[in-house]
Length: 82
Image 1 (cartoon, one colour):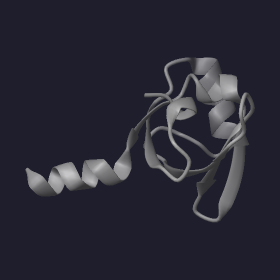
Image 2 (cartoon, helix red, strand yellow):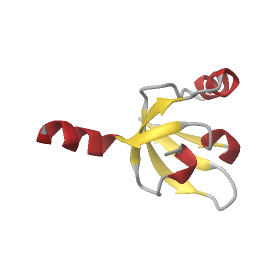
Image 3 (cartoon, rainbow, N blue to C red):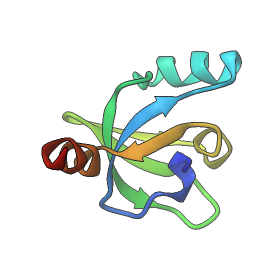
Image 4 (tube, rainbow, N blue to C red):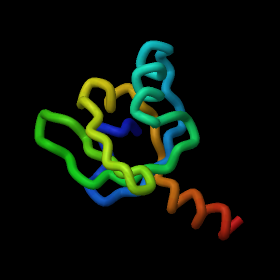
């Protein structure tokens, strides 16, 4: 799943940013692999706005389409069950 596909209010963990150029752009925003963010708004056809700690970051849709994520609260639940 990509960051562009998450629902508003979802808490996700950045799993992979496959492209080096995209990874460099994301790092400039303070987003790197392993970071936990919350999607606080999705503008139709526009950016995905995420919150990381106390910072809100607008990530362009095309950039968000190249960032692989997973639901981090579900990972915690899965780990608790195993």
